[in-house]
Image 1 (tube, rainbow, N blue to C red):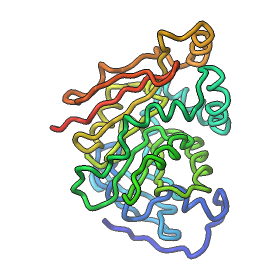
Image 2: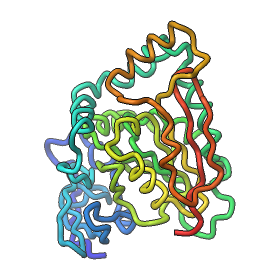
Image 3: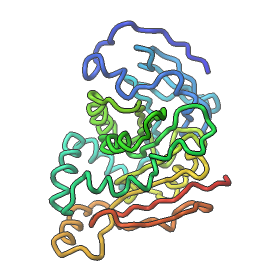
Amino acid sequence: MHLGARTRPRAPGGCEHGDLAGIIGGMTPEQVPFLRCPRCNGSLSYIGTMWNGRLHAGNLHCGSCARPWPVEQGMPHLLEATAVYGFEAFVRVVYELFAPFHDLGVRYGLPLAMLATEEEVRENYMPRLEVEAIAQGRVDAGPARILDVGIGGGGNLPHLAHHAPAGVDVEIWGVDFSTQMLRQCRRRLATWDGPPVYLLLGDAHALPFADASFDRVLHVGGIATYRDPARALAEMARVARPGTPIVVVDEHLDPAAGWYQWWMFHWITLLDGVARVPVEHVPRGATDVRVTQVSSFYYCLSFRSPAIR
């Protein structure tokens, strides 16, 4: 890996959150080998400035197709913007516009609609990720890695940290296609005292990571709007180690829900298209496939990534 970087001893001008922009969610050179070009899956090398030992501003260059991918204020931009089209592009614009209000809606508005708190729903699906057992069976001496696909404002972070076993070196990686939602996540991390978190802009259909990089993979609240759910699930399985638990949570109305929840669900999911469990898109060879209803509004689809690639 060629770094070709120079160190800046003090905060660069124009950074959000003062001197935190290059630190919060930023990556060190040690994380670069896990990244891949979303266009050709080639290895990347960083050429640019460093700040406090982290990537700050420059480019991640693909060794295969020579495509440069920008790093801005410590954030790798590994998203092929033209690949996001149609309804999904509209959803991305919505998230960009309403990002500052998203977490407020989830915390205060959604519970009034589904008659359950945000914490209750998250704790209902978190056991399927088996974070407590993340160190079992690992032969890699490095840290255990959790990937949150569509991390948004980082609502799962406290729960992932809570379930992480004591004494185990854990990293949390988050990818999202919305720059503004990632900005909200950075704000959450400004007071974070949990495991290291690394953020990047990317596409769930072309996850910018090497094969078999993660010990757990989680996705919450977006696959119903994806342009190709089968491809997104295949990508989650690709970047997961063989046998890794993969958990996908999204909207699905509980058949036992009452009339009030039925009405609220259909109003909330008006823009989501068909809200159903994409179990038919689970990658071939996956095992332990389960579907449970974790609240009146959300299903949990879990499976283990295929052992044979």
